[in-house]
Image 1 (spheres, rainbow, N blue to C red):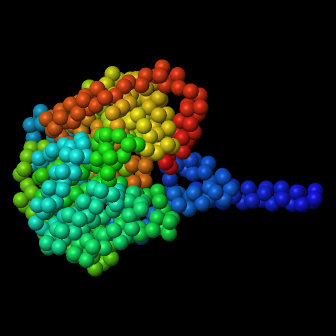
Image 2 (image 1 turned 180 degrees about the horizontal axis):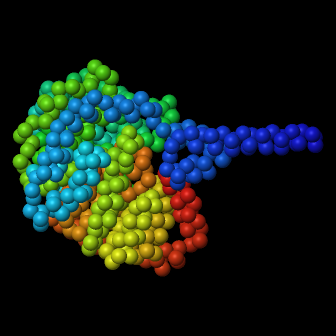
Image 3 (image 1 turned 135 degrees about the vertical axis):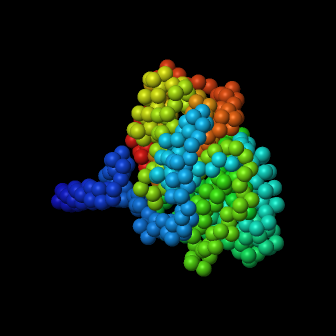
Length: 486
């Protein structure tokens, strides 16, 4: 008996040693952010189970898939980019114009994301699911040529079926309909959900052809973008997905607070460009789009006066464009920075930027939800909210329902609205897209929305954080350790 136990102990010791060596080799084999490296190392130290978790969540996307995004499609779409960038640098502008004020920010996005500047946009803001979906479905119903849709989540529920039925009708009427969705975000929706759309002449595909979440074994890299382009003239971008919860129909979340934009003008070209690139990377050669000029009608121009850049980011790009944009905005602030985000899990560079701004006298306010939709993520959000509150940042907890908006406004002059949260996942793992806006009137509207939301929020002070139970604070600290991989 004693010999048996000795053999078991030796066997367990050998397993632990092999596991730790394998963990070191595995985690350092791929280039990662140092925080993510240590977080994964901690997970992999759990024998067997750690490697199972890593198999699904830790491995990076294959290079061949990423190369499909950086394809000849993208090169073709960017043919005119250098001409515009040169013209922007050389074009004289009034010193008091916002485009001149944020000239360096615009040049940053042109350099790191080849993002076009358009100055002719008409923008409408939506903050409730009812108004957003009513307008979206009306625009789709009136489409005459093409409907391009890309969402992280399209659920098989009441609003999801309503959208699908409308798309089937439009496809049957001869309108080109293409739907791109994330297989993980739309979990539970089978491929057959779109069979009737396909029968009517439409198309639907999971992003990067990821048909099975479990066979794919790479759950961590998701298409989190929300893009709709109708006839190449109307575009949508923001935080809403397609599901009943976004209409406030789930008791768990209550009224859903989000922010989404409807765009007419040159900004639609950039949304269309991103969709076409993602579509061609996700489908078989026979379904790829090649006649790009058909999707960029000149009638989309000259609709308004809002200047904007559409900026995308993802693991296919060498630089974290949206995060760098956030940093540029924070560092440029002179008076105030107002942020809404459901997930507050910033990396050290963003924390330092917010800390510097707050200690420099800039009014920094961050609004987060008062309820979780993901337990670990919410506890990590609370940890960082407490840390920033101790640095002089005002933290609001939105009480009316679930806050899902991803907005940032700077000095009443510039703003960002899109799909990207203020967290590691949006910076490093997800495919995201944001609109960066240069328009005092539009930014004032966004800031009025923030002020209205403050009325439905309460301030969480450092003293209130300190009074939290020890067990809750432990959960927050533990969740923070895993934050680079949440």
